[in-house]
Image 1 (cartoon, protein in one colour):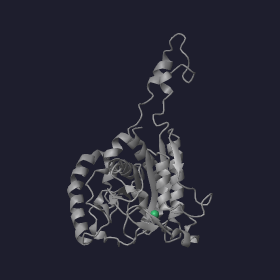
Image 2 (cartoon, helix red, strand yellow):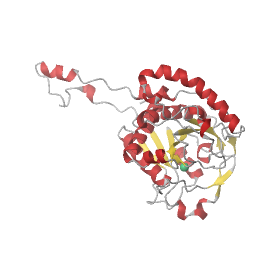
Image 3 (cartoon, rainbow, N blue to C red):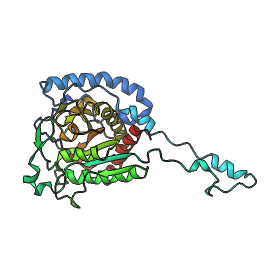
Image 4 (cartoon, protein in one colour):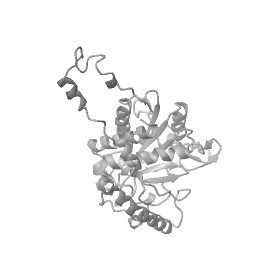
Length: 336
Ligand code: ZN
């Protein structure tokens, strides 16, 4: 859930892209689809500004992007192993069978991402509901003061955003660790943290880990009919301990990678209620972004209050696809 719920959701009519149009899933029509979407997205943005009276919480108009730009490289398949049968069909004298040490040096693939660090920040904490006094404490976010943390939202049937974010974060950690990355979770609710951490500490954990990328995992809680995912990018802010000038650029690159890959792996469309169909939103009011000195984004994976989105968010299979998409985006950003 967005930390700041002061802005009412935009009416669905603000959308420029129908969620029923699976343009993101049809790679063969990518060029045509993108060409068609760019003007539509721009029109959607203008409409959004009109409908909201210009009072969106974005500090500047979102740049029109093509989230699929990241998917091509991230989904490139590995070369086929057709060389292996050929080699075994005509063994050279003294050749060792495949799999024997020294037989095929190229198969000992170096992990280019080894030594890189990713911090995953599971949004909220399942214990926050029982610690409202503690999480309502105000903390300094540089540009402002804000609640330490919030409870997050739930589906109509009671599945907590905090459960969702922790589950996706753990799946994401497993995928990234398998690729040789060092992964730090900002917390593991219930284990060592009865509530929180506070948003300033969430940022500090990424900073102190010298993370190469930080992703905060959430799901939104707005009225039914609003659907889809969006990635939140840091605005350029400066004030107190906040100075995002150095992370705005790389965070956008990270966010674009994640948005494109998330759409590809989950089949979900970019949000139809904000972001003008790009799946990207810039915000200047989130302490977790304002206080970060490392490339960082939030992802709102869907709307827990919409029945169709909730059906996906409560599915373990879908959450695995979500984790895979986020991971592919991170790996693409890191050049792996
Ligand atoms: Zn949230």
